[in-house]
Length: 237
Image (cartoon, rainbow, N blue to C red; front, top):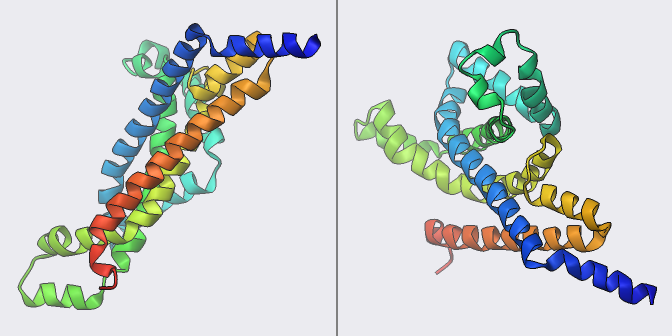
């Protein structure tokens, strides 16, 4: 009898109302992941170029940024931005309070800065791995540094960085699960709420784990297809 009651209680987790809550959590997770990755990608390209500069005034600040955000836990970064900014004197009376009063935007800033640091180093390594023969050939054609970077170095670096960057995308998807610790109702936050409501941790969290697995497999499949196209010239014929 107890087993039957437990099963009936577990079935309440998958009612239309609860599934709608899971859908809302999925949308929030997708927004955090996609926005952080897009903004981080846009920021990391110029930072990676600066990181390869031989000028220490240009190189060192980027190195310091990547060192700090790669060397500290993402959870601490999230707490520092979410809780720490509120301690700044006068922040609540400033125009920036519109951003920091909602939990979503501090979390987005933390995730963006973190993925920017990792992606910058990924692209930096890919840029430095560019063949010297390609660079010398571009110089022989009379290309400027900017033109060489746009036509030769960056396209080649993007192809080399793609397999590593795909891991960063998956990592960021999984990292967004800590957003629930600052009151954001993402997938993990919804699972915690369902667990607290029905006292059924296994169905709630296993369901979310399956959703993350599906998203991860979809991303892996997508990147494999992209790699198959951009790296087709490396396949044996």
